[in-house]
Image (cartoon, rainbow, N blue to C red):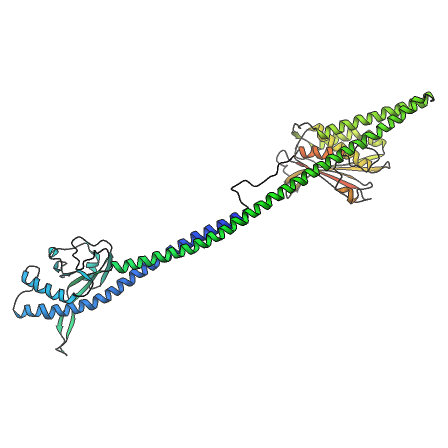
Length: 497
């Protein structure tokens, strides 16, 4: 008995695998898109932070420039002194007081003033006064008259915060400062000239703001991934549930198919047994009847001889039936060798020609030239051709007729190149009801025969890797077609076209 088949554990239907793959791909794309959006948001946020900080710093530096001019530069000049706070401690303290009063209340953690030569002349960190930064790109831009800014996650050594909290992120803004002079038209007003006075570098503490931005980014990322992950999990659970239900249905269907197959095998076995019983019962009945008649002893020698011949004929029929059944039930494995199909057909015609001529049956051969070789065993293939030829001859039911045998090379769309054998008759034909059962063992519509010839032919052809089929209409004859695979490359027919 066939065992019930089921899909191996861990495997799923292709449709469900596609759904799960699509879900996983969608989740991955969504996560990557979310990361890209969060990254773009972070970049825009940093750009906006730099822009707003620069605008704010411009206002602060402008105010600081005016205060330094009024509260430091003018008084120093009024005393006739040279301005050099980097060398004069008194001027440094004076300038430091002005600067610290100007930036008081602002989130400024450090401030530097650079002269046009790139030397620090003032800083809230007095230890770095007189230093230079030749590789500072933003400083070079500011000395060229352009504002520059950057965000530093790790502030440079020497930063002295004015707040108690530690500093992790700062915005460094470099703004060019120009010399102030009184407006000739409005002497009470000061205006900036084109003369570069130096650069003011301001450090704004933005750690808290950046932390809020990063926190918002993380929340957006977690929420987005959480929503998508939850949706994926929900759909995945639904798919898994459907997959299990479908697997159960498939297993039930396979079990049902196995039961149907078992029932069909039992039915076929019953039909086979009934066919054997029917075929054996008839000759046994004849032999029994002859034996009973012979037992009376009231027979002439001629009559007794005729009855004994009939008994031998029925016993031979039983032997033929047993041999045919053994061929059908236990065929030996064929030894496949490349064979010429035309040669096999000619051998059958030569062997069966005399017998068919007695039946008033003529052969009509149409054998294609240069056919490729086919894989088969010569004796078994000749048996197939013989069975088909005699089956065609019996279709005339004793009347004169013609059996056509054709070979050709065909290119089948489904199986590729094949060598085709066709056996055709114009006899009584096969009814639609019998057409589906023509290759079934012991099925026959003739008064003579075992009903095993076509079944054996089909089994042999399939052992060779070929196929056999039939086309027929009642009263219009029948055509049996055998397609054999090619043992070698098909011949080059370009010269024929």
